[in-house]
Amino acid sequence: MWLRKSDLHHPKLVTIVALAMGVVTVAGAQNAPPTPAPISLSEAIRRAQSNEPIFAASVATQKISTIDSYLAKAALLPSVTYHNQMLYTQPNGQTNQGGQGGTQAAPIFIANNAVHEYVSQASIDETIGLKQFADAQVASANAARASAELEISRRGLVFAVVNLYYQIAATERKRSLLVEALQEAASFTDLTQKREAARDVAHADVVKAQLQQQLRQRELSDADVAVIKARLELAVLLFPDPRTPYSTEPSGTAPTLPTREEVNRLASANSPEIRSALAEMQAGNAAVTSAKAAYLPDLAFNFSYGIDAPQFAKNGPDGTKNLGYSIGATLDIPVWDWLSTQKRVKQSEIQREVDKVNLTATQRRLIATLEEAYVEAAALQNQLDLLEQSARTAEESLRLTKLRYAAGESTALEVVDAQNSYLSTETSQTDGIARFQLALAGLQLLTGTL
Image (tube, rainbow, N blue to C red; front, side, top):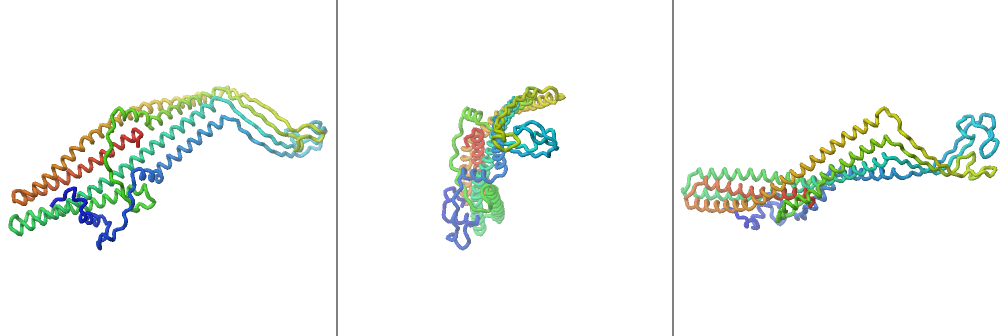
């Protein structure tokens, strides 16, 4: 007899299903190992983010870009160094007048000031130019783009985890349907054999029923493999050993599909693709400014405080002060560089035009993606009720066909056709639920709510 959905919780059927899944031993259900705690979808996403290498690379890129932005901004501030040096120069045998000590031995190298020279100075340097500020803007824009790319990578990983998570539920549901179908096929085979023994039907009915039973056995074997493969694919993202046993939570009731206006509003405000394209555009504008800055002069300041004297002391032998400061300012004005700056400006402007095209293309793609995703999700939601009605109709058709066959009013071929129809509608309903859940998750990712 065909099993109804309410029979899935019958203790004997649960034991049969567990035996087929390898959960309990043939010796008895009392030897079953404890079922692992189910992993929620949020926990699966968290584990995947810790183990997936591409996402880890995106996280590293974002952190590196943030540090690059900090370094570019730090370069705008004065730098401080403490310089210490002792210089000895061979004397040339003569003396000269100068320095803090009066007459002193002259060094052999005219570029040096004395035979003994000690330098111990704190130096503060600062360079002011448009290029430095433009480079900091480029680094900030690149950091914002890396953050947006990280969110894109996160959403891609989440979608992959959601897909695998729902795929496990769908494959396990299909397998349970095939367990029911196999039981039904075995029951029908037994019925045809009994009726053949009573000379109510021909042997052809038995053959047809046996073929149907063998088909269900093969399909169940394939379903076992599909379940194992689906669980392994997700386990690769969750555990160090993909063979680690785990279970998933029931899918539950799918949330309500949001309105189109709400989806458009959230997606436009939370789209990482748009943020990435905008950041790339900002980086392009700053790169053009940085290239044009080479036409302008740079102003550099230097302040040094310390000693630069023949003695490593605050005062010389005659009481002269060695400790002091110096201030310098340098203005470098570009004059001619063989049009190199002009070519760099042209390069940056060409890249900026590409960034503009990329921004508009990203905006168009977002609009199209939103429209496609919403239309698909709405259509799948409308199909759920139809799939449920089809499953109930096919179940009733099978029940009536079985009754008619038992009364000798239908053929075995009609029973087999009704069995196939019921299994097909139940499978389609399972696929429809999984597709709707995945489409809804895609909309949630586009709106930034998942």
